[in-house]
Amino acid sequence: MPKFIASYDLKETKPDAHENFVVNAIENGWSPWILDHNDTLFTLPNTTLQGSFANQTQAVAALNATRAETAEELGINVTMEKWLVARYEATPDFDSNEREKTG
Image (cartoon, rainbow, N blue to C red; front, side):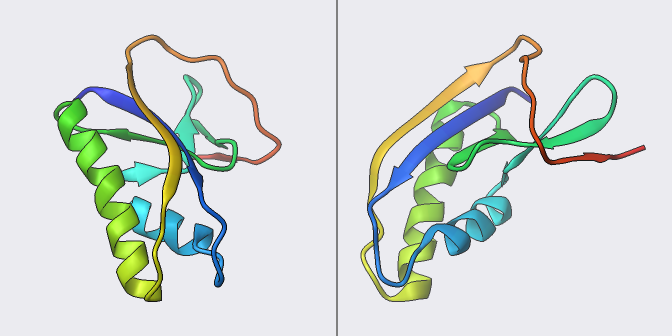
């Protein structure tokens, strides 16, 4: 399945929606972690997610569903002020201060 990366900015809310957003994103197929070629998981920068979806339309729908579920859960309006979903095929370069060996 194709891999996608998403970056987003949430409008500031009370209560803060970010933690709920990430939990809902995971349930919708997104992850705040990325796997390298040595089977090590690295955490992505805040407000960045990655996931595998059948196509870009489904990836965007999963991000929008995450926003809607978070808003419903918290009973507030959750706005993604900016967002980007892009397919990637190359092995990305990355580094993180948080990592976890999978194997």
